[in-house]
Length: 142
Picture 1 (cartoon, rainbow, N blue to C red):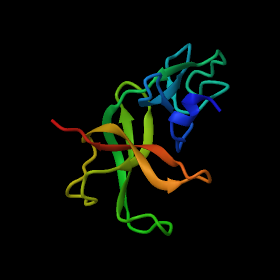
Picture 2 (picture 1 turned 60 degrees about the vertical axis):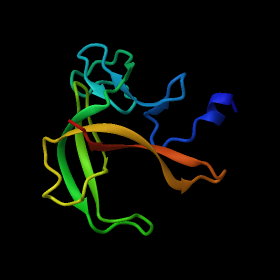
Picture 3 (picture 1 turned 45 degrees about the vertical axis):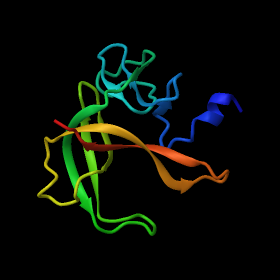
């Protein structure tokens, strides 16, 4: 295992990467023909059907809340309520995640609100005892 693999904790999704400086970021796959961006690797673009190789791009860390649901029942060990959110990242793609640092109440969460991506370690550990890193959304400060 490389030193970089030991230094960077495991991630919860394959499109969460670490830069040379160790800072986490989200990576998308951009169509060579139409520029559409996806978070998963693809054989063809679902917008223009191009089969040209996709280009890896760093996704923006800001966006707008497109829709949300306040979850009151979940798996054992998951604290509820929480806000499940879909965010339109600025000039990129839509991404699903959890909205944090806001009261899970419709009076405090509004579609169209400006959000930013943040990275946090999870409490859960893998077989080797290492924690995972995931991304979350939080309201953007003015």
